[in-house]
Length: 174
Image (cartoon, rainbow, N blue to C red; front, side):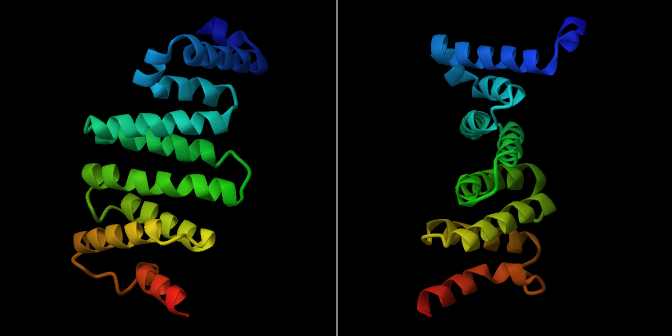
């Protein structure tokens, strides 16, 4: 640990980048089984764009194993790394599926009415509106909103952000 800390940050980043590259190139099975490890090395190397994909894969694998707490951690790490990239339509496009993906494991671990769940879906809703979503993600947000509303006793009337699905219908009509 002391030797690692004594390295210059740029040298540590080089070591992490090399570790990530070696894992990807020479150990594809280990990479497939533990994408979070590759994501960690890319993140520490300062390669946020690469890290996002591996943390997303780790989240997907965790969901498949019903390891919802792990899935939340991995998806949130992906979102954290994504926020290090320049803002813009491409980043928003990449963030939307991550916000949708983190919602279900958050509901399982924290409950349907948890603030973190509402925040994830509110952010997804914002991303749909900004991106002019084709409807599929907007529909998914609307369905999940209904589940989070039920968790709050069905009372979503006080928060105008919960009327997104009505806004989507108005956009389609007019």
